[in-house]
Length: 396
Ligand SMILES: NC(=O)c1ccc[n+]([C@@H]2O[C@H](COP(=O)([O-])OP(=O)(O)OC[C@H]3O[C@@H](n4cnc5c(N)ncnc54)[C@H](O)[C@@H]3O)[C@@H](O)[C@H]2O)c1
Ligand SMILES: O=C(O)[C@H](O)CO
Picture (spheres, rainbow, N blue to C red):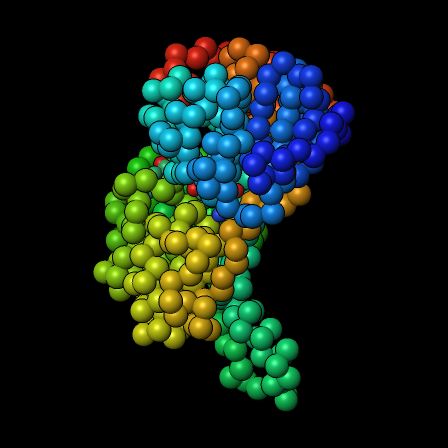
């Protein structure tokens, strides 16, 4: 890591400063994995200030203190509330670049940022497979009751094999339902199709030709092996998916159209022994309704990475044996988290250096390839059009 100047305190918040003489002052509200993101900011002539406070979630008051009187850009986290108050403070401090270290940006009021002429970056692509893998892990854990069985073993209760012990669901040949077949939904569906020969039914506002052609091609391949082919169907409604799927995995963005997308009525449409997976955002599921449903249907199972009132769980959830819960770790692989930090840094540094915006946020690998310099572009700016930012046309 480049020239660390030391640890300073802003009020009560400790801050590590790197490259103190840098021209642009950039704050990261959290330490992030890897060194590359800091090196890239230093190379862009930034003084980097990393808040090292031990409290997990910073308040707006904390962040305003960090921004201070002069700040050019901020890398923030999904736990923070980036709205008028924070963008107003950043604007007042002369800042015009912000990036979430996440692909989801439901914690960001993008129109407020645009009003203050501040760019909003996010980090798509590097977490697609990692997040889909965790959704797959939750699916297998729920289907085969892995956590219940682990707890049973550790409690010293295993006194011999029984034909009826921890009987769960076979995935092979069953149907997986995807709500939100974007990058992650499609990657997860492919894992279920290829790994477990599941059929796919999906609901999305848009057609996923990539998913459809993959399942068709894989079905054709299975036929050449003398095996039963797999099939896909694009559903006309969420309800259509819920009625037929044995596993339903949620991967949409969180917005007005997906808030409580899974409610009591829709849960009741699902098969009694179905599995519901959520690695998108907590409020996509009405968690109180889910607790009631899990309680009333002991054969129904769920796997949750995200929660409606994160970091809290709704009352009763933690006591239910038919749910697997993990603390929002779906993107938590070393490579992915370091890649997210790099993309966030490039979003901020690129804006400060007046670089154009990358042409394809689904293809960001050139930015995270350690063996070469990243392209002179901001990898993904969600309000680029509104701010009239130019696009780098070629992929270099
Ligand atoms: N748990 C985690 O750690 C984790 C990690 C990464 C992403 N996520 C969440 O996953 C989301 C999806 O990420 P992505 O990279 O696949 O994004 P994406 O934009 O590629 O996919 C989102 C999909 O949701 C669809 N969609 C939007 N509104 C819908 C609706 N009303 N009904 C059905 N589908 C709808 C979109 O058309 C799109 O295809 C992110 O926004 C984020 O909130 C969570
Ligand atoms: O949206 C995201 O990127 C996740 O929730 C954290 O990786």
